[in-house]
Image 1 (cartoon, rainbow, N blue to C red):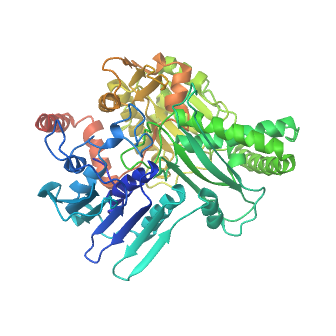
Image 2: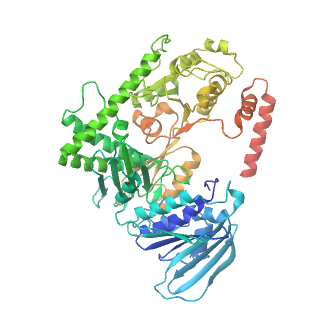
Length: 628
């Protein structure tokens, strides 16, 4: 189970999200959140109420299972497009996390003229489900009161600004639904109810900022006869381009706030860019020598995006980023078509928007030339096997250090040559942990890496010159197997030992290619899917999810990638190199700090530490046996 541990807000959001899902299904008119004086928080809705009957197979009340068992929610019933077809995610842990991390949790349900109550303590049932006084049949809903356990959190205080933002966004996305917050300590009450929805919210957030063109808003969802997407999938968006002031960007998937963006935002960016680019080219607005890029169109764009995705795949249980690859195509197609029509119906506004993007492109080009001029003297001859990128703007360029010529070939064909470079490495890089700096360049691979990235080897206390850095991201790209992990470790050893300032400045990354591909056949109106899995654990989770969705057992096929060279260029781009859909892990020192990290590297990579390594491996092996 995963959650944020800096404060209890996320475990409360799980309950708020459940109320919002009930509203999305059309059964809620009001959601009330109360901060009580004893530190507890209650969330109440006027929906149908969680079912209280006995589960036929589990022989326990359904409401109890919802708060104690994984994968017990109604969100998994999607065979016939159930009420939760567009719920906020299907990790299936949800309020189980809330219960597990609370000293006490009370659930009260009003349903079918009856009141029921159930009380938990530290995740276990304290007071079994019991029936209380009857109520009128029109009184329905659920109230959950939570006492977060402070031992699990850095601070037990709920951050007010973030809570207000979460509640207000629910009101924005659920047109007409009233969301209330009561603070018992002060008696303050705040209500949100937006009849204008996304547009009113974004205009309020931007204040008096000067608009370049009028507001562009729209929505589109897949119809019953859509061959590419499931019925109801799509997006609603409001985009405002401003000449000055702040840029506001918020996105949601099935009402879940995706603060780290994801593939739906990438789709919106791509759709807007393609529409503006084609409009500018059609009207011959782009000056000779100027190349429009997505960031030129997007630089002054503020937006609120609300996407509906049938089976959203998030990065982690806290759902900060959407990873569903189809969402790029989904949102991009709808947004491009809508903006195409709007621009051609409003040609003057279209020209103003295109001119704004062209100015951004020209400014970017001027900045890039300044950087190139500064680097023009004394540049070493670049290694012949380096396939360089076209751009020299190191704020967006990246180089992939790839294992072997075969994988290097796929990476070269699959990359975006505008900003991605590829440097194939022959065999395993030298273990450089105990190699003196003046002996490093005796190794050809290390020499080529240093020359390609434009930075000389240095120590942790040296004042390294990073002004010659040619790429903003140095990405280690190796196979997803044990051999690939070994190459990763050798390269990380090199960077930690001899290029520590690159790591400190956040320039080193590890690309994470998938080990498995699951081909899921078409079912009903749902098209065939390809799902990529990082490792065995993710593969098992995906298969479990498919079973919960009602996909017939063994109807899907599983392919295991033996290496990057086995992937087609398109697959490698889609899973590992495309900034919109890849998983790229930044490398940093983490909590233990440099001293502890150095000690660990000494033990793992030092030539005279074999006995200590053996003891460490045996200890880890014993721990693994205990865990199993």
